[in-house]
Image 1 (cartoon, rainbow, N blue to C red):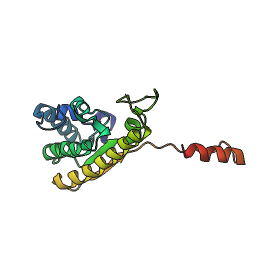
Image 2 (tube, rainbow, N blue to C red):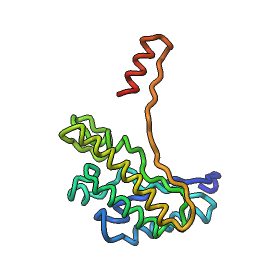
Image 3 (cartoon, rainbow, N blue to C red):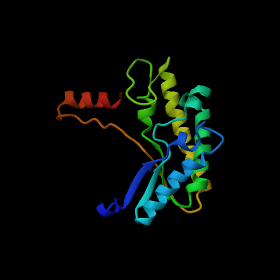
Image 4 (cartoon, rainbow, N blue to C red):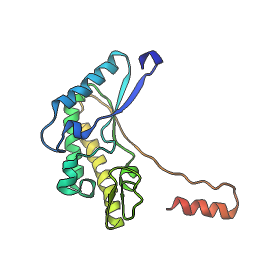
Length: 185
């Protein structure tokens, strides 16, 4: 990467690799993997940008309380973030809390069979789908608090969002109305 002139590298830290059961004991070998990766990036003057959640939830939390369908997931996510920051916060100053909330909530949980993303879970009501979004946004807020509390240096914190913008194909009233209706889906 350095030979290509890469100055920044975004990667994801796998929650199940760090805390296999989702809560409790930290797998230090998992931390060491990321520590070596980040140290290598620094040795080559490449700035690391770490994503803390890119759709890989610990299976134990799904089995225990249905993962993102439970508010408890937000607390466990914040604890995971604290564990990562306490071990890697001295090496990383660019944190991405959660990648594309809509993908793993509204496309990962559905009432019908339209499941195009992980975790691919059928639910009984659209309310459950919206609860996953609520819990993910709560986790985002708690993660920001955890990062600010645990980081030894000032850092940048964000999430990666994926939004759809609908524009009319032409400026006719019919196409404008169709674009507005599609936007509100």
